[in-house]
Image 1 (spheres, rainbow, N blue to C red):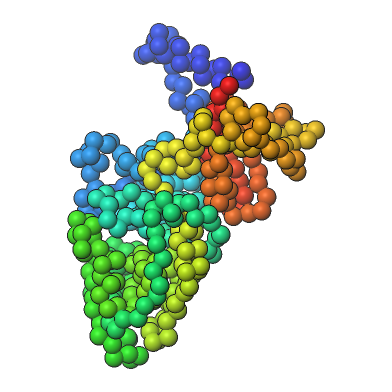
Image 2 (image 1 turned 45 degrees about the vertical axis):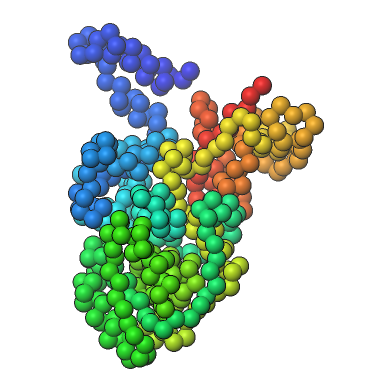
Length: 401
């Protein structure tokens, strides 16, 4: 045991016998933080988040439940506030667009400080009583591309089915919220809507309908966007609402005028309203699969983003050694159903073994590079995998026998 950890344990036992610190130094917080190293801080949202009804105590929580879940899944995560972190340089976890969240995001952009924004997922929440899927975006509010080649497992889990693009007659305008427009220094939703209608009439004589964002209980009934899109819609027009993404996933073109996850595919100018982009099944399913790897459930956040299945499942085991590294796959306890392949790896330090389930494909699907840097925590089953601009904190599977 190194000296830093030994000192922490000594202070902890001193605290148990002398909690008031009358005779011993019992302040072990600084020693604990030193061992944890650089931290990741979650910002407590404002009361004006969640449509002005943010109150975690009503649900039995002291902090935002999703931020807290993400903190639980990150070895260096901690709960904090904007007041505590406004002068720090640590990565921030931010949910919603309340006043303090907006300040934190803009401050991070100005300082080039890393942050992760949490908000509603792109698909899968259409008919759920509460939001199950939550997007997590690095240094932005939505994933702006490129579309990455992903497995279909998460898309299939959600139950997404491709809808062929089909024509309609009317234009459906989906104005953003007042908070969103203020954040992007845009006109009020009412002014933006009137300006958009006026501009559209320069290019088309189609009927125009405005769809204001309904309340949550209306969205899980017949008031959801999927139902609205089936009502003779030619296209959706919005600023940065995920309604544009929902349109593409449900067989309708879209025009997005602001930073939006749909702009990798959809049109971005009102002048194109009669010449809209449509896509085949392969493209849209690839887009949907990509988006499902950009959103997570509360349980996945608590598990360190990756939900690792433990004993009894197929496994992948990596052995890294300076004299030669291998990758072995098979089933726990099986002596015959196994395969072993040599792999190229530069190993620094002692030999290590890493055990994963078949969900390793899901882990690698989140990474955007061709080479991987793997770091194993010496005393816990946490493994950090870096590739390109992405870092994944994964929990190893525990092998039996």
